[in-house]
Length: 162
Picture 1: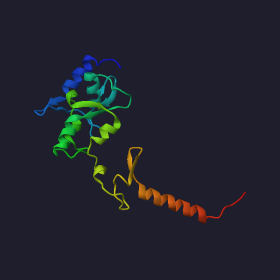
Picture 2: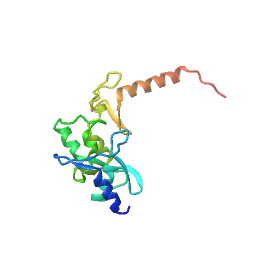
Picture 3: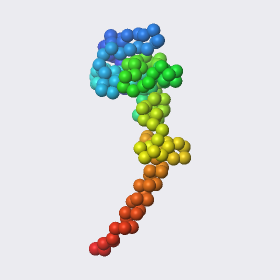
């Protein structure tokens, strides 16, 4: 990808307010999920990701995400609850951003589902009863119950030879 143009940099600076905490708050448009967006580099894109690319270069691997370090710090200090209303989503300061793998980025967030301690059937999400599949927690007890039910159904149905 080419370096950012002067017009892109001028537009970027025009919509940034610097806060006392060091965050560069985007004052332009936002996507439905609360991240800043703008037409930069000839296409619509997330501004925090563009800022990290423009100031620090390409991600180390394809698919890596721009993680907000300011959010991670605020979360650890109990100053931020996360979610779409998180004020740190608006931060585009490259000093507050870093390239992270998707799993690093998710693990550093406080997603509301992370606070759920039991599956819908009431089994605990703990080390013995939980597996991660496709980035989501699965209850091993519920999986065993579903498998047993499938086996039972399969045995009770008559076999038809054609």
